[in-house]
Length: 87
Image 1 (cartoon, rainbow, N blue to C red):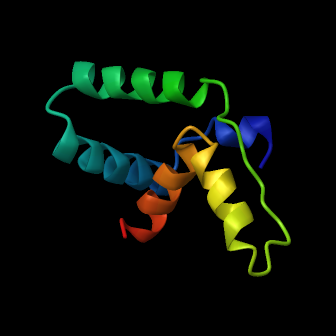
Image 2 (cartoon, rainbow, N blue to C red):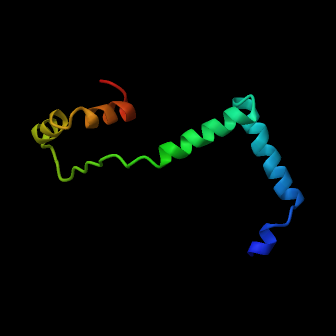
């Protein structure tokens, strides 16, 4: 689609916009609250990315894994609990 074609209003675009607005209206009572939420989400997306921690080749080395868990300030354990539930 060229830039000029994207300017045309079509029945499909109107229907897609209507669906989006109906979904937004279920969660947000007015334009102001929807706008505020969009601004907040965009701000969250612009936050610095969190630190990633990669662990490879443990192969039964539970002591090494426990050491990593204990020395990661709780971040890895928190993520494991988030994904798999608390033990």
